[in-house]
Image 1 (cartoon, one colour):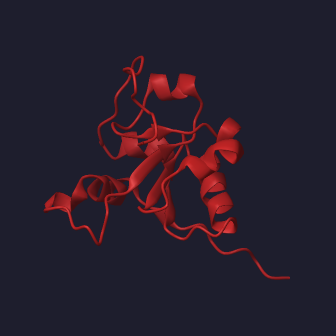
Image 2 (spheres, one colour):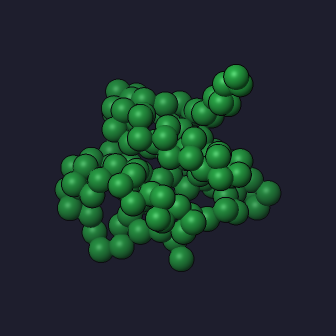
Length: 129
C-alpha cells in the first residue's frame, strides 16, 4: 500500500515573510499567498493573523471552490490539525500550490508574530472578490 504524500508545510516565520511580499516590489510571476484560517468564527474573533480570510473547516467542503486558484494558499488553524486536513483535501482535489502553516496560531504567537483580537471589522476575513 502506498503512503499518501506528505502535506507541504511552512513555518510561521516563513509564512509571514511570504505574506509580506518578502520586502521587495511585487513580482507578478510570484503572487503573494492568501492565508486561509479554517477555524470557526468565534476562534477567529478571539485571535487571528491580520489579512487572513476565514473558511471554517465545518463548511470547507462546500466552500473550497471559492478559493482563488491563481495564487498560493497557506492554511492555518489553532494548532495544525484542521489546516493540515484542509491542505490535504485540496491536494486530493488536484490543487498544487497549497501549504499548511506548521503549528498554527499557537506557533505564530510563540514566534512573536503579530495577531489581532476582537470582533472582526465588516468584511474582515472575507474572501477576495
